[in-house]
Image 1 (cartoon, helix red, strand yellow):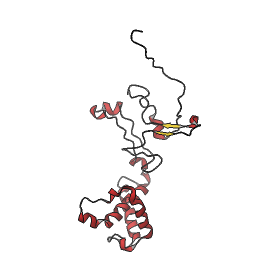
Image 2: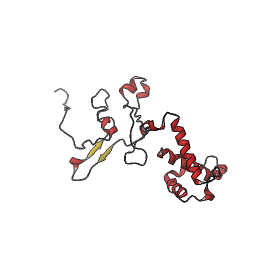
Image 3: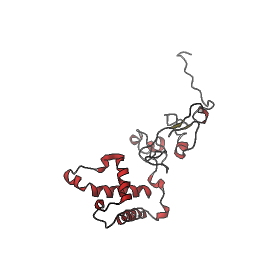
Amino acid sequence: MVRSFRLFLARDVFDALTAPCREADPNFSYADAGHQSEGPLWQLVTRQPLHLLDPRYESWNDQLLAVADKIVSLLSEQGALRDRTWGERNTSSIRHPLSPALPGLGSWLLDMPSQPLPGDENMPRVQDPTYGSTLRMVISPGHESEALFHMPGGQSGNPLSPHYMDSHPAWARGDATPFLPGQPVHQLRLLPRGR
């Protein structure tokens, strides 16, 4: 709800402020300013200058309440508000590039399982249904034995290998997995031809 409130409020505030820009150029979008809108948005909401209030509202408080009401209404369409979770919005969707070419088999054999995830944009644990950190490492020189490593999927690119998805559950949960290798589990020997 907090994330939606911030996004909806930004859209409402900046749509009203930039209406003359869109009249001059229909392709204008305040979103092109990227992350530069955050500071101005909270200055406006904090100081609440009446001359910059969206004309649809009588006060800044009315605008804030209207945005909150809209979010509650949208989320309530899916059922009781108390039952909504962040994972509904932030569910992993990691698909192998060849998966669409193998209907049914691709999603069963190649894709990582979909599951609710914590995190979001601009957070230490960056992950979203369509993007995220594909590798996380925390290493302090001299303390390598305490280092952490997270990787979705596994170390093998072969979907028939037991190591194709074996790192994925720890990545999804954010479990601390060691960076340094452990004892060898398998050996691969390369021998010259004829031996």
